[in-house]
Image (cartoon, rainbow, N blue to C red; front, top):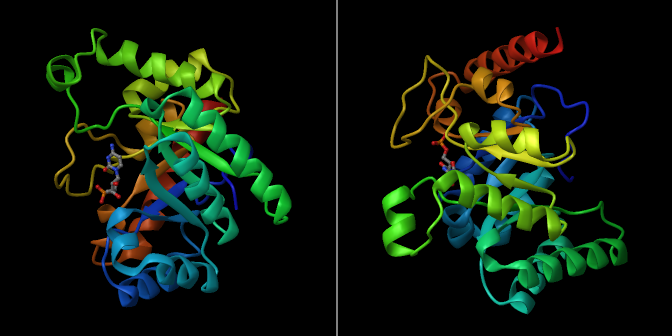
Length: 252
Ligand code: C5P
């Protein structure tokens, strides 16, 4: 499965973060939620604990996988990592845009060639703009970047588009501007989603599913508001309803 932002249902838009170390928990969550979310996000925590056992399990249970590896390395290493994922049936993954155009274009090229060779769907590669753990002070003082956060995110998003990256991971406040400046096919995935009824946890700049839709976000990463809910299916359904309501108001 690759991301494709045309005719998305509310369910398709939900990317469930599987932040766990345990295959049993993966099995429980995938069985419970595969009909209520579009795909399951595997990140460094689950991968370093269960590696491909987790990915194969999700796929065998009928779930789609997004590998949020946030790759950042020399071009050939990232391209080979992407190619390995595709050979194992994972066609959607992420890389840091700060890895530069050579890393990004090489990764896109090799991913597309590998997918073709193995008869897989066209890969979807998403670019990390600036981690939400960064603020202006860290950007300026630690990375010595002279731009403000908005300018820096825009700058990296142009680099993504030039490098044929399919979309970016960005906050809802950045999504509004990205949606205006880039074509509708350019994918925006937004984390830190918190419905009004959920607990904020350690996220700082949170946004509701409805606000994310109004900002032009295509996909939203949701973890604990669903996984830690007393009734995860009811929580997912409430988010689906909220997305549907917000999408209706956009179409008017
Ligand atoms: O919804 P919850 O806070 O549980 O989601 C956590 C997930 O969101 C983690 O997998 C994390 O990698 C991801 N994420 C994030 N903030 C970002 C980027 C990704 O919380 N800026």
